[in-house]
Length: 359
Ligand code: DAH
Image: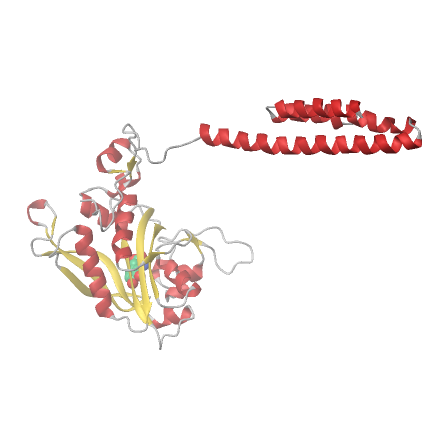
């Protein structure tokens, strides 16, 4: 009995002073492992006389339980201490200001997208996204672009190799309009979204790059009409260009997916070889829009007798060039650090309608 008491004190003291998980584990092995001291005593019970065996067995088993309990408790304690230490040593103060030497710049395209989101966000439109690789249905058919439409021909569209068994090849989306289709097919009206993203056309010269950006807008409800379309876009261009009395003109046009369709021009001055927005008597086209064609609504399972709405699409590079005076489209994608330092934006300068857009 006394011997057991001594053993108990010895092991509990050892456990109590173990300060690391590894030390605790070797104590466990020494006491309770296959060749451990307590294990050896337990297996020697067989050599005792039956009466002695019962009493010694009880004592030894109690010792074994006490030791494993103590190991478990100590293990938990060590884990907690370890976690506490890590939390302290890995602490990051998120409230500290960014280091002044950070010199990265936001690309004007990212900045312009943020501005567009801020303006339309204020009007209650949220952001929807879709994939760059689209199928024929979303990019063309559902948008009422018939089989023989020129936009489908090889010179404009990047086609992927046709997959075996597929009816038509996948394409790199030629506009952001397929996100309209995806949104209408997955949501019931009312719908109010903008869809900024990359678009691709096989075209490259002074004013075209094979990859560029567009933003699509889509608003569908029971009584949405052309007046809402006009109000929304006039507000947008005046806020974006920060010219309160910017002249805006809606000129009849054609798109297969809208009826009626219009193109939007803003007032500018082109005299003396310089372009000035908001002055003079010239016009500059900046976007396409219209009332969503009933066939497009029906292609998306929306009842065109009950719902109607408008859509618009514009090129992001184009409006960024106009606003920030960037003369050459191709420089957007040359990844020239000097260009980015000149035209880029401070990372912490997030545009918002409250704090203001960038000027
Ligand atoms: N998808 C057209 C393009 O790429 C732009 C556009 C025009 C989108 C009119 C629209 C719209 O949603 O209503 O040229």
